[in-house]
Length: 122
Image 1 (tube, rainbow, N blue to C red):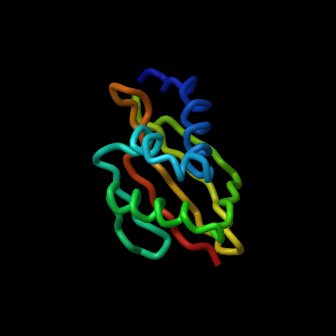
Image 2: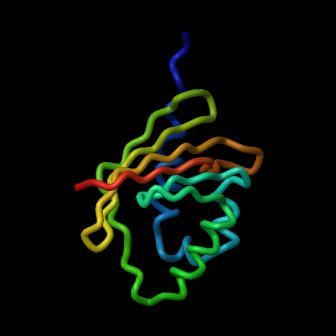
């Protein structure tokens, strides 16, 4: 079996980091580029989200000046199939920590996140 092309990892990891920035989270046009139309999320709360509900949440958060930045720790990625990358990292936001996993797929207009899950850490 041929080795997976890992040259895409820096691009996808950069996009994952960008998605956690206040600038990207406040830019709905950019979010529509980064989050696939069929995007799903299972939040650290256990709640399931789709792209539209995440856009509403991020709109509310970007209007709230109290929203704290998201710390990203141990960011890593692996190619799991051609055009499919799994990204894992730990988040820290005002002491709330979670282990996070995202799936990114290469689509016609570039890489898009299709799934994200957060699991609380003690």
